[in-house]
Image 1 (tube, helix red, strand yellow):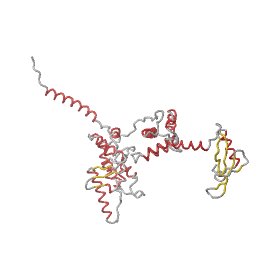
Image 2 (cartoon, rainbow, N blue to C red):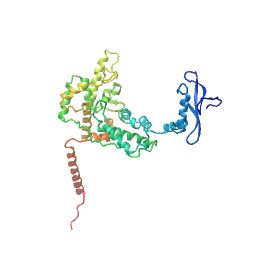
Image 3 (cartoon, one colour):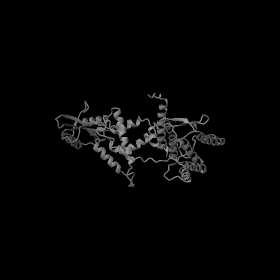
Image 4 (cartoon, rainbow, N blue to C red):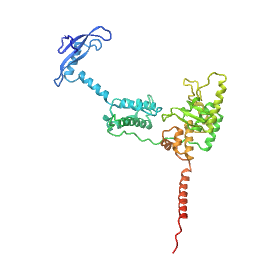
Length: 405
C-alpha cells in the first residue's frame, strides 16, 4: 500500500481499500488491497484491483485472497517474476525473428517467414528449444505430413513442404546455437529425405529449333522477347520482367540484375543475341518517346500497378504449344535450365555458371544442372583411357634403353 495513505475496512477479513483516482476518467474510485500469509507463512500485502478498471469489489477481492492463501493463484510478485523470466527466455519465436533479421538472402527470407508463420509458429513460438524433446518433434512431423494443404481440400501437404518446414526449424535453432542464445534441441530434427523430383527440362536440338521458330511466329513479341532473354541469359522470370532501362548499358553490352536470391546485385556482359533483343526494344522505346514526354521505366512495361509486365501466360502457352513441348514443360525455367546445362556440358566451370545464374556457390549448379547429355560420360571415360595410354607411352619413350648383357 502507498505510504501515508489511510486505508478503510471493507467488511471482509484481510481486505481494505483506499481512495484513488481513475486514470482514464480522473474521477474518484476505490483501490482494493488484500493482506494474507501464503502457504510458506510469508506475510503478503498487495493490490487486488481497481474499482472501475478491474470491476473489483470487496467480495471479489476476498475470493482472490482465499485462492492465494491456498496456493491456487500466484501472488503479484510471483507473476511479475514469471513475466520477467519469460521475457528473458530465448524462445523459438524470438530466435526466429533474430534469424530473419540477420539473413543475408533478402529475397528468400519472405518465403521463410511465410513457412514459419503457416507451419511452425503455433507449435513452437513460445517454447525454448531445450524443452522440445525428440518424441515431440517426431509427433509434429507426423502431424504435419497429415495436414491438409487448405480448407476444403483433402490433399495433404507434399513431402517437399514438410521437409522445407522442418529444415527451416532446424536452421532457426542452429542460428540460435551459433550465437549462444540456446543449447539447441535435445535431439535431432527429423527432416525427412525427399526423392529428387527435379525435372530435366533440357532441350534437344530439334526442340530448340522448334522453340525458336515458335517464338518468332508469336503475335505478342513482348512476351516472345521475355522467352528469348531467358534462353540467352539464363535469368529468372522476375529478374527479366523487373528489368529497368537504368540497369542496361547497351553501348558496353552490360546489364545489372537487382536483388537476386544471393542477396546482392549482379552485373555481367550480355551475349550478342541478348544485346540485339534489348537494342531492338530500346529502339522501339526511343521512337515512342518522340510522341511522349516520358517513356516506360521498365524494359517490359505493363498496365498494372507495379508498372511492369506481370503474367503473359497466354502467350507462353501459345509458344509452348507451337513448339510441340509437353504441357509439363515450364517455359522460362526450361530455358534457364537449358542455358545452364548447355554451358556445363561444354566445359564451362561450375562457379562461372553459378555466377551467371545468380547462385551463391557452385553446389546448386552441381545438383541441378550438371547432369551431362547422352554420350558425354562415355566420351569422358574413353578420354581417360586415352590419356593414361598416352602418358605411359611418353614415359616409356623418354626412359633410357637398358643395355643388354
